[in-house]
Length: 211
Image 1 (tube, rainbow, N blue to C red):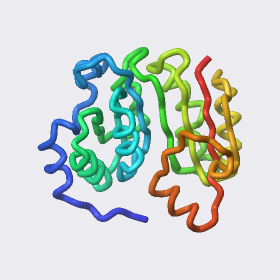
Image 2: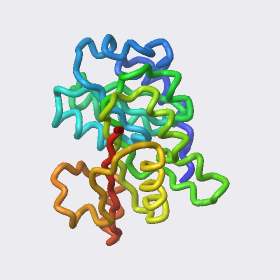
Image 3: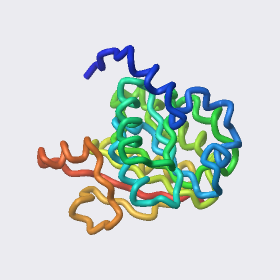
C-alpha cells in the first residue's frame, strides 16, 4: 500500500535526539551516541516500531537501532519510543543499501529482519535483505558470532534465505516453518505477524550465526 506523504513527520523527527538524520557522522562512534558500552542490536525495516519498542523495554541492558526509509512510518516509531520513555533506542531514516556507510567494524551484535519485501521476481532478488549481497555488507560491521534473526510469511523467500545464509558463511542455529507451534520461547510478535496469524498463516523463522 502506498503511503500518503506526511509533511509534518520530518520536522517532528528532527526535534528529537532519538532520531539520527545524519548517521554517517557517527560511524565508529555509536557507543558514544548511547553513552554506554552495551551491545547494539539492529532492526532492519522496523515498520511502525512495535517490535523494537518491546525489545527495548524487555532488555534495558541492550541498545537498539531501528532503520527504515519512510518518515511516514518512522514518526510512529518515535512516538512509541517516547511514550515508553526509552533511552536505549535510536531511529535512523536510511535506504538500507547504504548500511555500510554508517557502521564500522564490530559495532553491531545482532540483526533482526522481520517481514521484509520478498522481491519475488528473479531480477529483483538481490534487493532482498537476506540476499548474499546484503549479508556480505553486514559482515563488514557485525561482530564474530553475531546472530541474524529473520521472520517471514513467504515460503520461497524463506527457503532462499536458508541458502543465502549458508553461502555467506553463517551457521544455521535454528529454523522452523511454523514458529508459533515450534516451542521457540523468545519470539517478539510484530504488527505484521499478528495480522498474518489472525488469517491462519504460518510464520517462518531462522536464527543464524556468523562463524
